[in-house]
Structure formats: structure tokens, C-alpha cells
Amino acid sequence: MPYADKGRSAEYYKEYYHANRDHRKQQQNARRAKLREQAFDVLGRTCVRCGFSDVRALQFDHINGGGGKERRELNDTHRYYKSIIEAGATKFQVLCANCNWIKRIEEDNGK
Image (cartoon, rainbow, N blue to C red):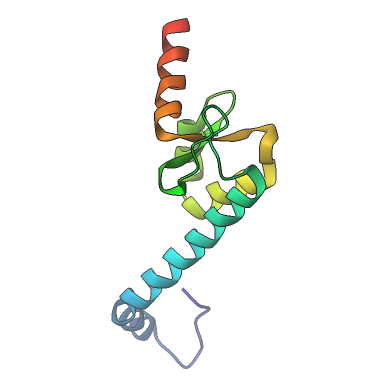
């Protein structure tokens, strides 16, 4: 929410927030898509295991595991994508959905 202007009440901002919900949602989706594209620019747009390249099924994978925990701690998709962009290939890789599940199963069976 923007900084409260002394001339405007909290009620004004509450009404504005609800009246512009769809517009704000579109803006959030556009920012999220842009960050996702930037993450693909950093890591590449193909699965590192099989070479699959349809971005609709590509996922960002933590090389050493712990992705679920990090996503829960960040609790924000924008911050998560920014962490991928900052860390790059030292911490993340691109896998297709199938290879990501196969990796998860292989790691679980190895424990």
C-alpha cells in the first residue's frame, strides 16, 4: 500500500485497494512473468538432463535440494525468482517437470 497521504484516510486506501484488485493482479502477474524470464536468461531455457525446451514445463531446481524449505521461508514468488537470478547456476538449474520428479525419487531412494 502506498504511503498514507495526510489528506487521505485509511478508508480511502482500503476502498482503492478493493476497487483496483483486477488491475493490481495483472501488474503482479506481469512482474512475476518478467522475473521468471530473467531467471531463464540466467540459467538457460533447456532441461540440463534431457534437453527439453518448452518453458511451460520447465522448473527451477535447487542443485543440492532444499528448494521447498527456501520457498516457504521466502513466502513470496518475487523474492524467490530474485534469489534464483542472484545465485544463478551455483545453486540452481533448469529441469523439465519429468526430470525434476525423477531426480526427487532418485534422491529419496538413495537415502
